[in-house]
Amino acid sequence: MTSTVPALGTPLHSLGSAQAPAPRVDAATLQGVLLDMDGTLVDTEGFWWDAEVEVFARLGHTLDEAWRDVVVGGPMTRSAGFLIDSTGADITLDELTVLLNDGFEERISRSLPLMPGAASLLAELAAHGVPMALVSASHRRIIDRVLDSIGAHHFELTVAGDEVPRTKPHPDPYLLAAAGIGADPARCAVIEDTATGVAAAEAAGCRVVAVPSVAPIPPAAGRTVVPSLEHVNLPFLQGLMTL
Figure 1: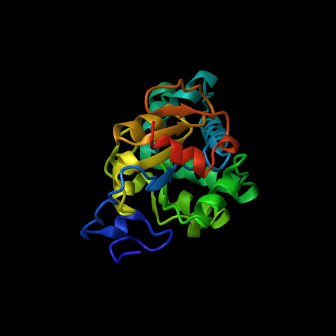
Figure 2: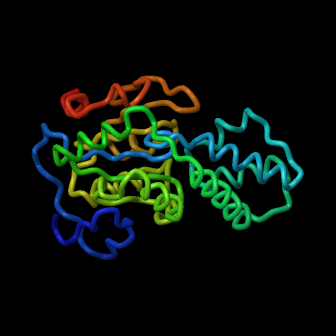
Figure 3: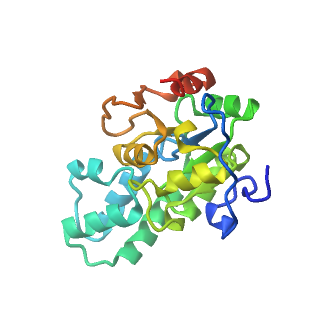
């Protein structure tokens, strides 16, 4: 690993002003795998909704189940802002963000189930030396708690939603992750579970594997939809590079 790539599990912002390593040049190979976290590697999308329902109940508001698809997969500022606007709750965005992170963190301290196939996929990619990055809209405090369970050692770097000026659905997090592992975005496979994350990865020019968690995601050019990570392995991801 070159000196400009962060140490294992290091947040991306530690790159500072260092020049990113040049992308690997073999256009026929898989150069890296960039993975979302909530709903992709860990079965936590429901935890976020439960935390939101609980917090707003304490504020005297009932959330509409239909809003669940609106708030899933995006940055905290978007989902929290939407819920404040929709309910008229008397709370600031900063105050709500703290309460939601607290509620989520309390839930994952009790249980943090992996998605089916997640452990075997991470082990296989690590065994073959495939560079991996974790790219999440969740905040750093949440990512670090999850990494305690799934293993920070799997990832060359991690990107948190509160460490980039524009998070998903903008392409920035995936572009930064690809640069951080020295890869061409077009030679990276991204694994996502929401339309917001898929939009970010596709805007970055990556090949996308969608594993829908809460809402359906249709197939599209450059995008493959599978029912679970149990259908994803290294040969499958390598094959995406020739499509």
